[in-house]
Image 1 (cartoon, rainbow over the protein chains, first blue to last red):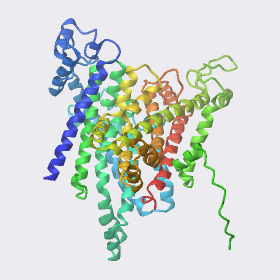
Image 2 (cartoon, one colour):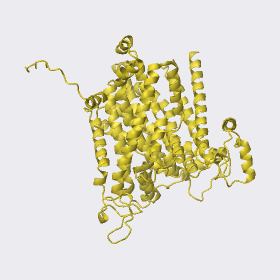
Image 3 (tube, rainbow over the protein chains, first blue to last red):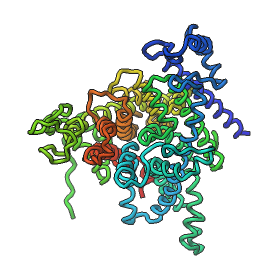
Image 4 (cartoon, rainbow over the protein chains, first blue to last red):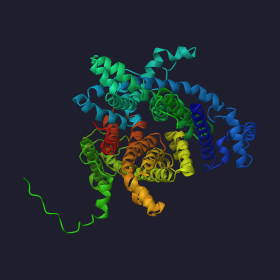
Length: 325
Length: 304
């Protein structure tokens, strides 16, 4: 019962954050310098199109009325027309979202598998020279600009060695009949390798450091000492007893990492010309394609907000010691 | 047996304000990581201050070789250009030196803003509690819902291009992390005996906050400030790289964007795009190293 109430208040908080972000987005794009109608209408649209959009978004009405119309449209998933693509923004975003999600999740899964294993190993080898050398190295990977790492990777593996393609998702001329056909092709995976590796190198630090410090905490607990006294092998103690318990907070951090990764994608997608949400946002802002910029921003914000929620809920459900007070 | 010194009779001189502030910051001088971090900061500060003396050329000037050819894409050491030149004939070494100026300028102002705003909000929310706390923490929730980099991009595109856009965006959004941590710290400090005592003795809220609570959270603010320096420099680099930076100021991010757009990757001009990245890594990791030293002092439980 207590839990239901806590989840309820968390959902209320979610609603507040969603409303606030949507409102901030509205204000940012309406109060920008220049013609207020520029948020939806491009001068090159036909008069008919302009009038239709004018009515749809109530651009001739006062600001508060526009705001209500904007909220109503959002609830129906109506985001306007992209200036450059001449197609609905929603449609464009649905095309780009899979690319971004594939890049994000493939890199994060690699980063988490590596980070968890390496973190557990470093905790086990605490005080050794391996650990002494590894920690500053890991901190250094966290300090790298992601796009710079991408540039170095491109220069080495693509331009110098010629092993992997330099950008995009497929070689020119290659056509694929369907969704699955493209995403499982060798061509696509070769294009995915460099950007995913770049993001993975940057992201492995968080699970690694988290896993290491959790392991160190857990290894001091009574039940681990007990397992040692029982004479279980080091491997059994480390894996069955310590690692399983240290893993919990690392798994919840995955949800938060997805949100952060999506923001970092903005630059990495630009380096590798990866047709995802982040690169589209940058291009749309640069080309003053405001409806598309708003749509891409909103989509990224939505994923960030829901991942924060997921992390909170996971944390509470996976670890009964945490109470929603 | 060592001789026991006689207790000093002279009244101990009150240390001056600067010495007291340094002590209040509790700089972790016995941690090798932290000392390395502080030394890196020191080197970059010196380079930034004496940039005019250290740089060999004007970083924006288009240079020519002694044979009156455009000094474009020269390798390091060619024609006395220490680290080579860009495709437009500008000196890379001098750009690197001047880049430390904008990096430190942005890093320190942004960190100051983030630490100040975050600390004040955390202090007020934690000390006053109730509805003040509720409102401020809901604001923090909202700030956590804003994707930071996309927000900076949109802001930088709508405002005039300037290096301050990054500082403004950070001040608007990134105070959230500092504020949450400071607030929880204040919540425990508030119940301490000496704070109760001050309240019973009739001290005003302002006096209790400034005199009894704020000094105790100063090291935490400094810790979050040193993380924010790194964030600011990374953010500025990203924004400049994406083309929303100030075209009139030389920064490491600008250098990387210039190199990327001029096909430096295909030309294998590692001498051009590797050094700015190394500089960014050094300054940002210096912040991390200091942070680690602090954590050992502030949370001794963690250090083993």
